[in-house]
Length: 390
Image 1 (cartoon, rainbow, N blue to C red):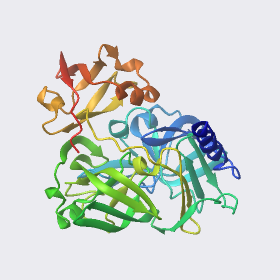
Image 2: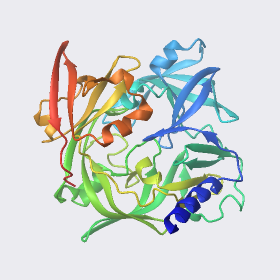
Image 3: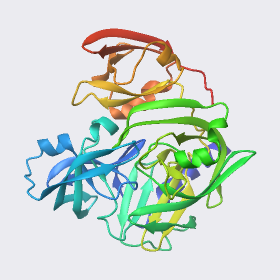
């Protein structure tokens, strides 16, 4: 009976977490997807506090009936090693979020779907939003853009001072890697990242993170706007923010020589796998972050065991693309390679596995047989998943 009452209380608190201000529905699977209208056309935009600008995917732009006339050229970088030449729309892109409408002054157009998958039609940055209050309920898949925050809105929340500069949000974080290493300071709050805590390559070198055992090395064919990326996953003892302590977290460090995870003013980035354990209110005008644990606060941080990751291109190309391989994993030893096209998983056509189903689809699998296509030839690759190594 006590357990039933506890569950009921958690659900009630969840329903009351954002009772004062309006919220709208979102999709959430590693990224926050905001249903939108871009110049009148339906779009699904990834909300990305790591990107200052609202951007469009090049395929989505090409299929749009709206004809943009104010277009220029630029270069754009991200978490990859290099920069990408892009087209830029100036002052013509109008988009919605809930019942609000915004106009973007600068809107890059680039190949987003190879990075995030077909679900995303663009990125929603924060430079056009003005001084808004951003609320996110990961558990119930709700979001809100508010004009202000009231005392009732933040009742039960812990306030944390943040730095908001140049359309970037910096949060104070302390990560205890092991008994010999604690890394603390400013981290970039990057809600465009599906990860937990990612250290820059400069911080990794300074703190000798390469000496941590065990760790898993990964290589990504497309790690971000800047292209390829590489790094290492490991297990850290804990991470603390605002007095909240998350134990036994998965973390990673970059090996990139360029981009957002090389040598930067911040120590690393903090992504959705960390923040999804909270109800989140970001008060940009007053430079405050309000946190309140949700029912997932004590959820264990999973270690990567599949040995690979993919980008879902089933809608536009008819397959998934292998985009990340872990060195010495069973997937790699079985012959899987970056850029392989996955046509089916255990006999199920990937075109029939929706984004909402994918997380649950893999959850209980211990092994896979992948039908792949490489250089026009089809074959199968079978392997068991790795035992957790970190």
